[in-house]
Image (tube, rainbow, N blue to C red; front, side, top):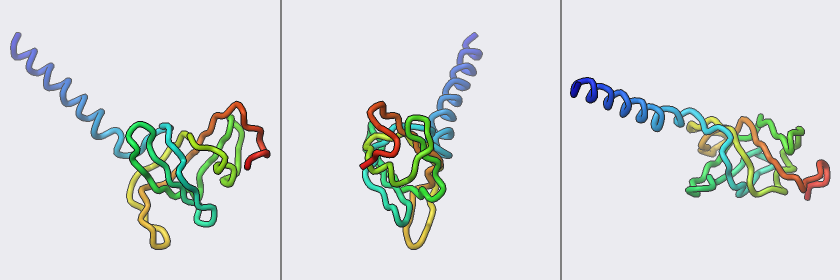
Length: 119
């Protein structure tokens, strides 16, 4: 009985370790971030994770942007501070910049935003 308990404990510990340390390595899926800055010419975004303030500089050249479930332009992001981002992390070098990864999708939900009337 004690042996079964030990094996069960080891399995649980391994599963938790795999979930915590192997899952998030590839990407963070749609977490909330604070939009700190955007570069319209280079199409880069600087964001920070809301709970722990960790910053990421991301390539947003081919990002899909939706505001209230409608397609939007990159320039319209300047009107928002809190966004949800799907990204792929991994060191990327582009035109002399070391980036933290690529943004795949940026999602904004704002009931007060009227499409086409951004700042």
